[in-house]
Image (cartoon, rainbow over the protein chains, first blue to last red):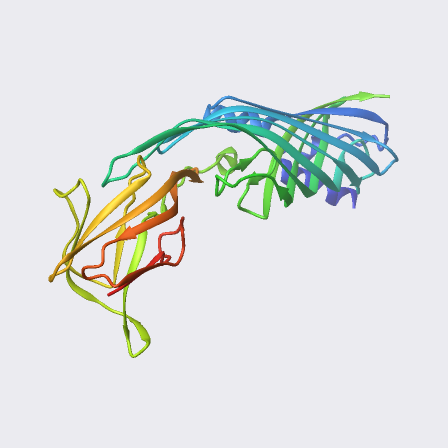
Length: 211
Length: 140
């Protein structure tokens, strides 16, 4: 079983099996993580600031309390429009750890997530071929949404108290507020507002403060 | 892997054209039926230089409202005579999608028409938000 778990870890993380410690010990701690996937996406798209952090702590040997927070400040330019978005989102929930050999974690869990965000259309233009184009702005408006997630995650200890890991998320939208002037928009932390369920992937690096 | 999860820039495929769709009807023996009308020309009042329909055979005419005005008038030329059709409306921008950007929605608050060839006009849907809905019935 242990061998199989190590093999799964290695395949999924693209790392040699030898990085996994085999001391068989379990210890408590507060683990704080930085979401590298949001930073990586932003580095490619280059539109503003997005950061996300996560924290987890073992409550019992197998249960972890987990909380995430993210912040986005970005500008989106598309065909005929410029949008600006300012958002925070938070998630809270619990993980159940299936793996007991060392400090590594193979977990399934649930989260409740919500985001509150304000967006503004600094300018837009609609082409009207017969009478002439229409231009305007849409003033800042604050919206909110909340959702539930099922999460599968892996974390492995690279060095003492330094972990890397990832999470795979399935999300179900519970409600969204005030999108009357928009058919679809991006809900920070969730995804597109016109989809009742979405998926997500996050890649993290963690530091654990042992107790 | 990162490229997989960064948002893909998609093209705009289904940006709706929001125009007033008016279908032609006649009533014969108390039965109404859609009709195709031949040799119809249409232009917006003030845009006589640019015909929306030029001697066309039509079951439906789609009329673009002036988004920068709250009133738009169209002249409909039939072979025998012409009529005018005036709409009072408000314009509201609507964010369709990141790929397509904004579209314009209209709310018809009223309309007037002349009755040279047109017998009557009935409003079916006053909110102009979809491309393919029938908003108006024109009875000849």
